Image (tube, rainbow, N blue to C red; front, side):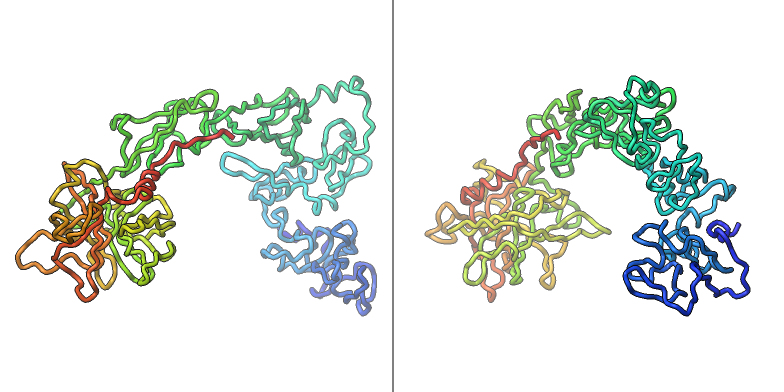
Length: 601
């Protein structure tokens, strides 16, 4: 069936297609006077386009009932807009609104039901409803959205309903245009979606209107409900007790930190003559989920009724199993093999605090091919003046290096925005992913050549990114054997392989007679026919000692060969890690995650 039949009230079979009729019987040579005082050609009247500045050539004041176009007929190969204007049939359903009310693009006119094009019409959502349900006072168009539904109102829009026929003898026209039976006026229920059928009514006393009391369904006050009348697209007031009429469809959402026990975020009920089609659902409290996601050190799995569920809107009875993320381990107070479990109680509170896991420090995953996993604590420190140094991860949020590495030629500490940290991450496409992290703060060591770089983000630990351990154990800190790592550099770029240099820890006098206990003296382990291997760019790297499979930092290299010397095998100076200023040490300790205190909404 042609869409022409769907839209036109009358189609005139004229011999000339471009003839336009004069809706009010005027000569086309005259001008049409717009209500704002301007004029247009009569040929432009009722053509679907608002040629008058105020649109009065199509309809007045956004009111389609006040239009010159309503009674006009359209020529052959033209179709009629909902309010009466004529546009060429070629413009119908072309994706552009050529009618002033947009009716040429309504799904009602553009989408036919595959089997019953006359009996069923399309909503804007694309769903079909019976044609006689358009403009009947209640909303029937819905749009499917997963398990939920929402109204789209397109069956009760004023631009369509105000011009729809409505017998004044049998029916009542709602203010927005919908049409209901006269018997529904002033019956204590809003049968028009705008409630205009109950406006200006003089009701009898409630005791004389048993019908109004008995019909419909009751909704008792519940501060944890958010209820909408889907027929009227309005909220239902539940201050004490409210009622809705038969055939009313409501949607219910929980609020105030409550949720449905079945996990749905929204449910629907229909009021029948015998009451609700199903009992109104109960909203119950849920446990605060934020505590489960506040830390990078843990991962969580939620179990409810022996099934794995999303850790969202957590209902009582749910068990949250907490385990450590990669690169972390359970605190000493908890067995490594134990999975820490929290239960959401009936009061919507967790039965215990959530733990945070501790970083795995000082462990390396060595392979036959030298790579960043040989020293996952080692990083590069780069400044805006292209100065490069080494550094060591001492916590997921801090890197320690030499102070002179982050100073300019005037020995002034740089702004943190001028410094970045270069880190070796996980493998990507077979190669180690090298990335940079910004620095949020530089804590300098004052007179001691050491600086702590606070990172702008907490590092995600992996086999190539882990912190170093530190200790006060004298057997480790007084070791006479150590080593450091450095980046393999190529044209001033950081590579993905680290070089390892073995060191001898010498008496301080070997470096300087005046060297105090804040510093240490090291030299590359002696080997014949070896060129200088402690080079510019190694400053700031950690001096590391391995003990029983765990690596510890005992110092920070601060030797800075001149640019002419480049590299050396002579003894050089490092800062003893345990002698760094207290403010640096305390800042590292403060990086430890604190327990997350949560407040229920």
